Length: 167
Image 1 (cartoon, rainbow, N blue to C red):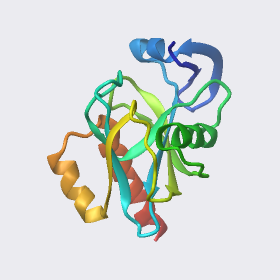
Image 2 (image 1 turned 90 degrees about the vertical axis):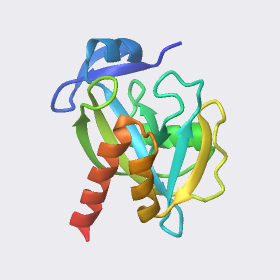
Image 3 (image 1 turned 30 degrees about the vertical axis):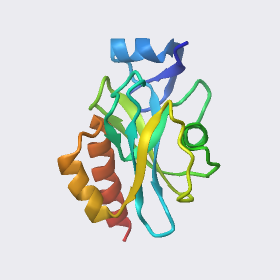
Image 4 (image 1 turned 120 degrees about the vertical axis):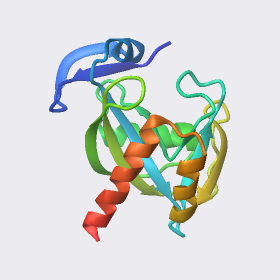
């Protein structure tokens, strides 16, 4: 069964229309997606490779963990739910910023979060085939050498710019 999402406008306002995520992607309708950049206590970043069985971007690497916001969910609620589903952890991700992401399958609002998580995560094997912790320089090299999802490049570069502006 396909996920149900809410259509939003170019100002990220809910339009009151519930559609399947598959239809939102097919029609290019804006909807919300929440992702989290996960760090450990040593400031390493969690990177994972998507399972070959997932419908979107099978086998590609990702810098963030996440998925579509369900009907009625805030970005933070969706991000926390996705962390529990994909990594088996309870965490309170902090929303850093949102933007319209036009890379990937269709345009969508992307809420980028950050969370410090334990390095002993238990990924869902149906979603995640491999995971590892990388330092920022290691991740910089991996982004040039490995095949990442389209969201990963833009979301992570914006994440780094956001952090730099806060320093």
